[in-house]
Structures are given as structure tokens and as C-alpha cells.
Picture 1 (cartoon, rainbow, N blue to C red):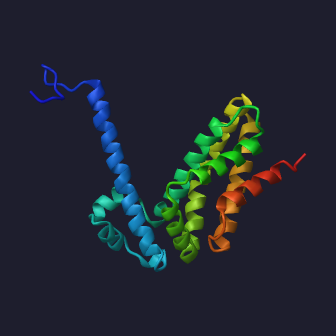
Picture 2 (picture 1 turned 180 degrees about the horizontal axis):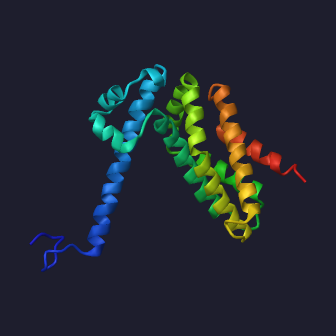
Picture 3 (picture 1 turned 120 degrees about the horizontal axis):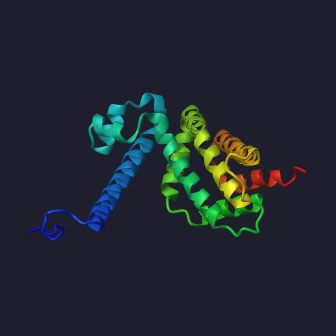
Length: 210
């Protein structure tokens, strides 16, 4: 009898969770590997000139496997921003309840930058964005609804109102719009400078609205 099996031959719930968690880690690592390989190609030439076959070969996988992780080039460009969005959302939730929304979002962005663990990926992504800004803009547009919804939910939590409240929706759209604008501006400037500082400056504009 194997070490993970009971006398009935079935795995325990704990073992199932452990195995599931291990699979998720492996999938995440493979996703990052595919993403990095594609961005390395995008950093050298326009994304539109890079075929899926070449991206798959660069990652050492089949085209079929590649499509299990990404639907296309724009999804590769969207992967990093989506991860950063999830990170910022987590940090906003951890901010003191007494802070204003502008303070909470600004501090969350600053914390995300201070704890950055993917600097090499961010730099590589910035080079790729500079070479193929159209793909980056499309990727950001595709993730706009996800960002809007995430911000709406977290703003509702902080204000103690229902997520469907128009106030949460309006503020979520405002912060989401600022992120989209700032990102577009950052791309237009060649992906140089601190995106976090630019975001904090954009958030600060909201405090001027009275």
C-alpha cells in the first residue's frame, strides 16, 4: 500500500489538496516560462511577426500545449499586468481602514514596487511593449473589465457598501480609468521611469476633485 493511500486505497482530502497545490505550482511555473520565452522574442522583434510555433519552440513545448496556457500574443502581454493588479488588490485590502481610497491605493502601489520579485520580467516586458505598443494597448483593453470589477469590489469593501452600489461602480471605473490612462502614457514614453510613481501621481489627482 502506497504512503498516500488508506486501507481502502483512497487518498485523504489533505493529500488531494497537497497534490492539487503541487499541480498549480507546476502550472504557474510553466506559464511563467512560456511567458518569458515569448517576451524575449517580442523584445527582439514585433510581436505580430512572431508565430505561435516559434513561441512554443522557444519554450520547448508543442503548439497544443502552448494554447493550454495562452490564447494568443495579447494574452502574453496581459499576463504581467493582471498579476500586478491582483497584487495591488491584495495590498489595498491590507491597508488601514482609516485611510482614504487615494491613500490606500497609492500606498498599495508603493508596497507592490518595494516588494517586486519580477523585476527582470518587468524590464523584459517593458522592452517588448516599446517594440509592440499596439499589442500592449489591446491587452490592457481586454483586462479593463477585470480591473474595473476588482476595484469596484475592493472599494465597496472599504466603504462598507454593496458592490452593486453606483458609488462603488463609479469609483471603481475612476481608478480603473486612471490606471489605463497611466499605463498608456507609460507605454507612449517608452516604458521608462517608475510606473508605480506615475500611478501614485494619477491617483492623487482624484483628491483634487471636490
